[in-house]
Length: 97
Image 1 (cartoon, one colour):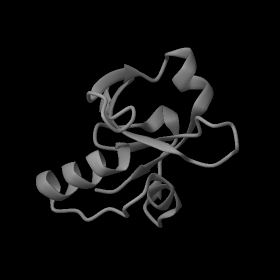
Image 2 (tube, rainbow, N blue to C red; image 1 turned 45 degrees about the horizontal axis):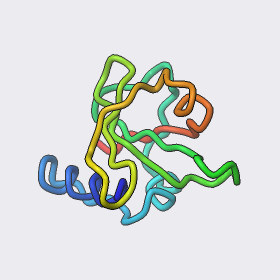
Image 3 (cartoon, rainbow, N blue to C red; image 1 turned 180 degrees about the vertical axis):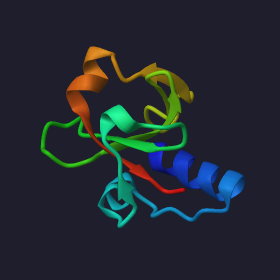
């Protein structure tokens, strides 16, 4: 799932231990990043269910794109933050490095 991908990437590639869930990541003390200040490696959060609560996360890779695991059993993919669906559900970003 999305948080599992991020936990794995940060631990294996940067030696950084992240909280286990996307909601816990979003609620952490890590620095919040404005959308217009995103840098590769920042974690972007989404509220896809419309309930005001973070339920999805991805890794910003630059040029308005992020990598994520849409849901368990699906392939990891790259999407654009400019896509209407992701623009509408974008919630926040954190910098863990």
